[in-house]
Length: 198
Image (cartoon, helix red, strand yellow):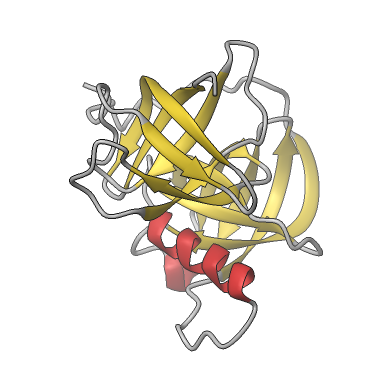
């Protein structure tokens, strides 16, 4: 059911927007974000081509941005798309969802982005039950929220409500129990997990 949101009904804005002028670097989609995180992680030879684009931020709120999209890049921009977001002058990648797309009289696209994490962590997930190869995923925060949950973004179809996973960061591993699916798109599953007691 979560894959079938009504595309013409953008969610209500949760906080007031303030005008600003800044730049953000965007990469389109979950796989492009993983590529950038792997590039940062290895910091060595990486000859894969970056899909990064520069967008102009027009306004900002506590949980997102309004941005102007370069005309050359609009073929992939649509509501519900996941994007990697890096604020100009920072090294840290965040993650957002395109919530609104509007075209003005000059045929320029204005996009509303909801930021779901300003600082993500690439982790390795494996399945103690077996049956699947370990793979990279994106952890939205290093600490659980008020509900005791942590957000994890995976490849599409990877969330299993019945399967515990092992999540390995740079130095530690944890077992995560599935809690609920938060959202999903063509190239991602965004799920909430609870950290199992070690």
